[in-house]
Image 1 (tube, helix red, strand yellow):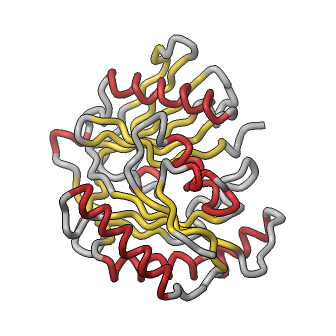
Image 2: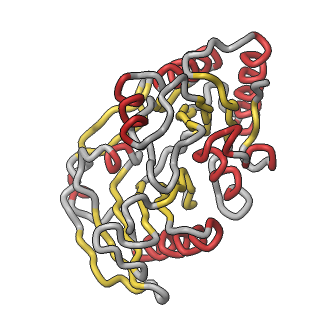
Length: 279
């Protein structure tokens, strides 16, 4: 039976129910700051939500409204396939993601569209290429408060370019992380040496655009001129991301690829998965 499970609850740490993406965040929500949210447990791709499940989703969204005191609290709606984010296949970009979704009806619609995306031709071909079943894949969906960050980053606890296990690689840019993961901006780069986390390489690039919230979703806007060539992270933020990467690698037991962001003077963890490019 499908149900709604909150991040941080023990029941939401089972990958066979909520997928690795949600399960990892749920497990880590007890040791680091993760935006609040809930997972809709596994369903066959394209399934129609029944009345009971739809009611549970609406109730959960209202709970987020109460927590944030925002009647149209913005959320990110992301797929969390049951065989997603493993050591050999990350599924990054294969399923639809919807950002800045506001209101109960819009959340229901985004969840159903997320579910359908698991049966899209590109997602099924990706499954076949990685030796995974393409017959009616099971997919869970993660609904999570969308924070409005000053800067976002992708952090690797081992260097995926050189293979060095004693280096941490950080790429960062202004605004939401979609400009970084989508490749529409050349992000700043920081390389830290473990165990002391000293910065051994620092490359700051001109960042002309950034992704921000907009009516009905997100949009790319020009970065203010005084910020374009400025570092998107200061030293203490680089250090905090490095320490977070080490902490999460220790907790998970494998080198991690994480997405995180600074907002409201806090470092939020948004995603954690294995690095799939290390030998």
